[in-house]
Image 1: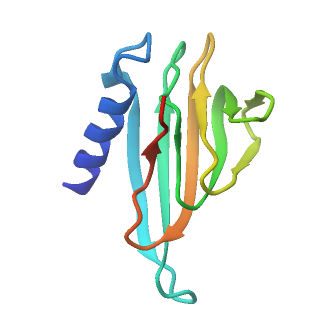
Image 2: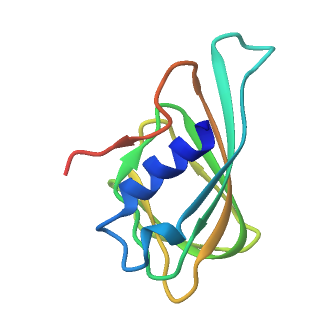
Image 3: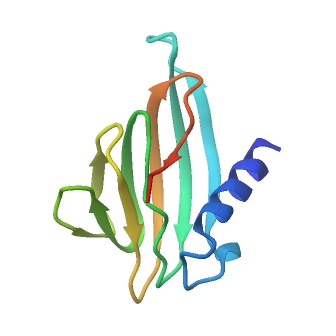
Length: 129
């Protein structure tokens, strides 16, 4: 049930900003648990598939985000930083509360995402436009 709600929210967020159908963006929640060694801190692990020619809405996360590219290519845009292109096998670290977005080109991307944040915080927050 939770995975379906998160997937619906994620698809809603990308609708209208993606040239690909929002139904093509997939979010699979793999793990959501509190860290035993750090009470009140939560880790979330997700697999995300973003199709070609897609730009996600600008957003930020309350905690750090780490993304490992399982396949494909993606360009990471971050506020006040240069765009950087990443490819399969590379790892990206996005600081907490850093406004960013992912942009795919001719091919899509498969990501394994790790997020660490205070329990009870939202997974992502849309940035002011």
